[in-house]
Length: 210
Image (cartoon, rainbow, N blue to C red):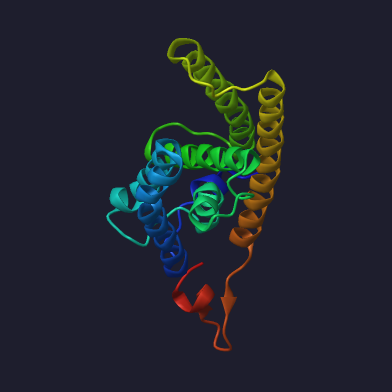
């Protein structure tokens, strides 16, 4: 896969910006309610996602430069599920799928704002590994809490094993989804520009961008 696919994940299209900002507004609006309903964990996750999402427009000083709204939506699925009362969207599988999306966001922003350069293929592998590592770290944190603070986060070893299985499945699925997403963007970027009857270039989406 071409490196330009990762470099150009930040978009300047109007429609993408509108969708992304709507998702950010939804995340910000549900933060307080999630604290009351489920505790601080998902509220902190939503806050981290909001911070990561606003870095590109702040860095470029343009509200139109945003992460792809599809990636933000994948990361926001558990929070949206909690806000709508949709238990399936806030299940362990979708939680780790969201972690994978956040890992991709981190890769894109490292690529865009630092000297780090990661080929898309390696980035996908990083996303998968980071998802599994997050599951292991989260299990360790809960175990320490149970031992030191006498909490009861980990009920049985079987439940913990199933959670790790979910994290592996979510990481692999996210890797496949991101690979297909990169390839679609490469195809779109490599497509020759449309021209009208006079030979003038026609901007996609009437100049609004994707």
